[in-house]
Structures are given as structure tokens and as C-alpha cells.
Image: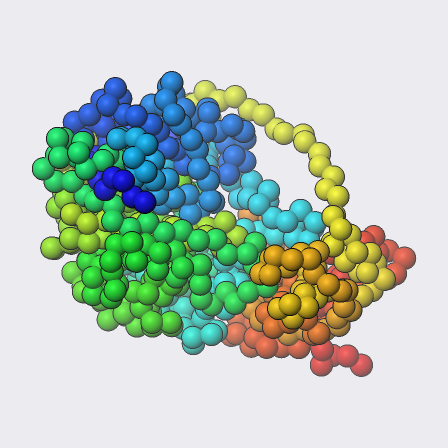
Length: 386
Length: 176
């Protein structure tokens, strides 16, 4: 079934910031150029391009994939845009993976881009277009409603306190202090989180990642090509994805079953039987602090309701037994949606290559990146090994 | 980011750069209008809301009674079998308290929104709606989980066949 083992051989990203002068195209170009340069390749070496970007409403620009094409290096190449909401960022390299694993192509440039700043004064209202137009939109929902509903259900079901969840924001923003592209790195306390503006209880200002512009990219290639271009390839050994029902008011929100399914698919492919023991470093999707915990449980890295305990014990710190989000995550580095998931894949690449500098997790050989989104219904998972 | 990279691409802008015209921009405001047909299942659901009733759809294979109703069962992937009236009461399975509007402005008064599992429908079959008549401080303490609630309807002459024909849900205990 799989004809080629697939390697990541280069990665790149722009700064993540609230507003960027660069257009989406220009950001794609910057990230793609850095990824190609770091792989020692040029666009001539690239057989195909896969791009991910989230809702068109942010840019007010339909055909966004086509708009970004030239910056993405896709001129006169097989090219496709993929989209699964917030899960897109890790779905792009999965789609890139199957382009190469299938034997159809030897090399693939993979890009995640997001420019949320054009929607003025705030992209919040652009999210109105995601709701069911008949049953939900007339209630004038705010996007944060549904995540607050999920967070609250998770807290209630397992008896988790807000101060335990806030530790994730404290850790990730601290980790981001060592990421040179980070948008909101900070030294904060649990009290700062609990005293921040209440948006939609139980979600407060510091529980949540920012609005961002940015792009990130990786270069994928077959084993044959990888052996020619690098001594230190990072292999994609497992991929998984799964979507739950869009009827999100009809299911238990305390546990993300679809994330578990996506993870099980990826673990099976990678031959991983004991995830917390075998995963050395994980970039888990953290647009909100509770999501890191929720996802650790879905990914089988913690038992149900027990991720807060691991966090409290320091297990998920960079020097802990199971470092989670050493990059600083979306909470610290920023959340340009499709680019944010790709940033996580880039981080695992740099971690497994030993290039992460101050953020480096010691002896990282096996890493995981995961993203999540749509109406709390998609999980995308990738397993990488050095 | 790799420690091998020393320069990081991108030129950040501030909100003031836009306000003060320091960045060249082109502006556009969409004026698109939409009218969505409600479909087979939800049209009936909306008609029943106009009558002050909630209707569900049952799949005889998996046995689920589904709200919102659908003409197909996404589990069994077959047509659903019958219409079933369910109650306008239920139980709060999760909720949040919104201090902001859809546009991100601050609300004058916080608003409770909840997923309400409807009595007579299957477990976890909830709908999203507003809840009024509850104490916000108690709500912040998590006291509303499991609370029994009842729909408060618009007067019949004002109903239009919309989810907003239910104004909100209120605690069932308050029923006189």
C-alpha cells in the first residue's frame, strides 16, 4: 500500500504576529523559501505542492488556494488546497505524505498559511459563517461559546479546576520566550490567568490563543531522495485523521473520541503500542489551555481526566518525562490557524534534528504533532522519527 | 525555529498603523444576502416550533430519537422511520456564560447559553439555546449542570417558524 517511506528534509516559518505587512502570498513565499533553503533544494526539485489555509471569510477572498498559489511555489505544478478547519495545519503534511507515500511523486512542498488580520476590526465576526444557518446562527453565537461549553463539560465530568487548566497557559507562554518567531511569549502566573478578562465563562482572556498572521512550510521527499540530500532525515512514520458528527450538541463533549481514532490510526501505522512511553516530545493543539489537556487524553498520552495532574507534576515541562508543546504552542507562539498546526510539525522536525536550541528536549527520537478544529469534530495526527 | 536560522521573515504592523494611514490599504464591505431553505427535516421541525412543540425523528434500527431531526440516520446510513413529539423540557448537560457579543463587544448583561438534553429524545440529544432566570454567580460555580429547564415560548401570534420561537429556557422549578 505504501510505496515510499516519506522524510521531512526542510522546514521554515515567518514571524507570527497579530498583523503583518506581507500579503498571504508573500508569507507563503518566505516560509517556502526557508524550507527549501534548509533542505538544500530549489523549486525545480519539487514535484507537487499541497497548501492549507482556513476559512475564506478571514481574508474576504474566495479561491484562497489559487490566490496563494504563486507564493506557494505551485506555478505549473500539481497543486491542491486541503481544509479541515483548525485541523488543517496537521492535515496539510498528511496530504503531502500521501502524495509521496503513494509513489506518485518524489518530492512535495507543504505550506500552511493564515492571514486573519484583514477582517476589521476583529476577525471574530467572520466566524459567524461557520454556524448552521437555520438552527444556530439566529441565536447570534460567538465562536468562543462552543469552546466554553466543551471546557465546562470537561471540567464538570472530571472535577477539574480552572487553576489546574491555567497551568497550561503559564507553561506554554513561558516556553514561547525561547521561540524567536513567537507572538505572545510571557512570564505569567496562574493568578494572572484567573484575573484576566472573562470572555465566555469559563474561558478568560489568558486561556486563549491570539489572532495571528503567519505561514510555515516543510519539504517532504521519498527515501531515495532523502538519502541524497541529507544525513539527518526525519521520517513520517504514522498519520491519522478522523471527523466526528457536525451535530455537536448530540454528543459527549468531555472526551474527544475522534482524536482517539485519529491517534490510533497513526500509532498503528508507526507501530506504537505505549504512547506515553514511546513518544518523546509532542506538539498538541492548544488554541485554548484546556485543549492541551483534552487532547493529551484523546491522544492516549494521559488517562481520562488525568492530564491536569501530569501538568501539575511538571511531567509536561520541557525537562519533564513527557514534554508537551516545547515550542510554546498556539498560546505562546500564536494561532494563524493552518500555519499554527504546521508550526507544530516544524517544531517536531527541529526537535528531532536537535536544532531547537534553547527549546531543545534532550534525546528526542519520536515526536507527535496534532491539530483539531471545525465544530469540535476533527483530529489530525502525525508521528515523526529521527 | 531552527537555531541555524538567524533572521526571521515578516514585518509586523500595529493597529494604529491602519488608523493613522501609515499602511496602504484597500477596503471593501460585502453586501451579500442569503436565504436558506430549511430542508425536509428541519422545515417540519420549524413548523412544529411555530405550534409550540418540539419534534424529533426516530431511527428504528439504532433506536435513537434525534433532535434536531434528520431524514437519514448518520450512524445506520438509512432513512429515519418516524416523527416523534418530544417535550419542551430538558436537562442542562453543559453551559457557558457569555460576556461578549458575536462581534466581540462587551455585553451589558452576561448571558447563559447551554446544551439542553431534550426530554423524550435519546441520551445526549441536545439543542443549543439560551437560559434565563438563573443566578450568574451560582452559574459560575458550576451549579447549573443537570438543572431541569423548560422552554419559554414567544406568544403564538409572534412565532415565525424559527429556533427563536423559543425565547429561552428557564429553570423548571419556577413553574407556578
